[in-house]
Amino acid sequence: MKRYLTRAFALMRSCSMIAFTVLISFFPTQFSLGQELKGTLTKTQANQVVIKCKSDCATICRKTLAYVNERGTQYASVSQAIQDCLQVCEMSKDLTRPGSKLHCTANQLCIDACYQCIAACEAINDKKLKNCINACRTLAIELSYDQLNQLTRDIDTLIGLHQKWKLTNSTKSQELKARLAKIEEEQQSLRATSSPSLEAYKKLVDEAASFKFELKRELQSSVGGTNLTGPLP
Picture 1 (cartoon, rainbow, N blue to C red):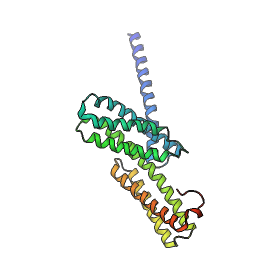
Picture 2: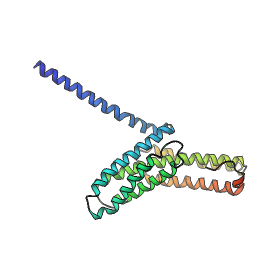
Picture 3: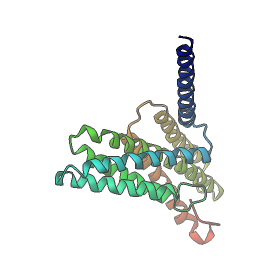
Picture 4: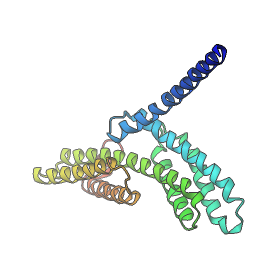
């Protein structure tokens, strides 16, 4: 009996260590994602989260692709969309690093691939495609948030240039800053939502991109490219 009890206690200790290891490996990821939801991650940490989301999406796309390829010709369009998303995720993952000049372009391509994959999967009533849809939606939201961060930084820079070249009076400058603050407020509100809408993110990104375009066009037409020092954001 004593021998059996000893073995039982040893087994319990072993199980406890396994459970502890699993929890330790799980919590850092959750903690990092939680930090980012509050906007407290550094740029490098945020890039690491994006890379992880791309890796997760690629992994799920690869598994889903194997499934749909066995379904026949009716899944042909879904297969192509998933394959595109998989390839773009893997390619753009290597460009998600500080200093990469193709970082924003690669991420936009990845967002487009995610939208295409979601649409193709939702067009077929198959519950086994749900994981792929969710992975694509998560990645698209993460990249949209990253886009908004870059856009708001660019807008802030452009507002500063408008002030430098005296293209706006104090009242107009305050209006531009208030418009930027509203976009940032909506961005943080979306970030704090437990189940944010991908459509809401897309709408806000489009709004910010339009605002940036207006500021940049007015600056170029009023000052002229030859008088500006360095490229505009």
